[in-house]
Length: 265
Image (cartoon, rainbow, N blue to C red):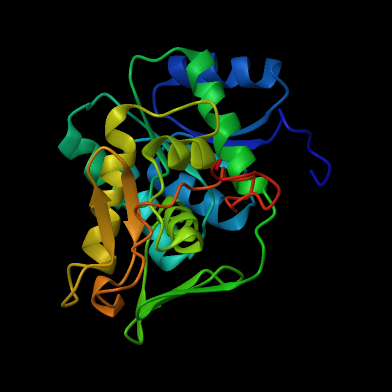
């Protein structure tokens, strides 16, 4: 599996409905993917921990251990960052928040088109395969080591989802500038944009971890503009806030392009 091309990958498909599993699995195999199967949560967790998959496609309702618990154990106990695409018949915002909070990267509501499933898989695989530069990013009292994925604030180690870490890396590299919603979505999901609740749900869960336990917020929503990560208390009255500075487009790794003009005279 060392030389997988851009449109292939090793997928763990976790689905207890045999008809759905066969339909999805056969489609993915025709498209060049290798697929392992599990029909219950315990088997799924064992396979996900002991193998290196490009994506885990995880049904929410499973016998033995549900998808939420599988995802939580995969993240918190096994410390695996394998992208997880959760399948569910539940489509409320609250359900999505719970799924993403458990560590899922994306959320697809049943019934779904297998072509949409594949598009989302491709986006997750592209994102995960990108080469991440080794750097230590700091905003205020929060630090992210992109090599070890260790996140701390005020000396306390924090745990966020893989998408949350990607979000933070984008915002921290651009701090204190504002990053538009569109730019964030494009950098994380590519051309396969998620539904309108997905980014909002990830940001909500991110705020619960990096801001709520502390005495001041670092993540700020700028109405009709986007989002910024900044320690506003550290900005002096005469300093530039970054709000009025046009932002250079991001390259494939979420960095500002050094060769593009951010604004014209």
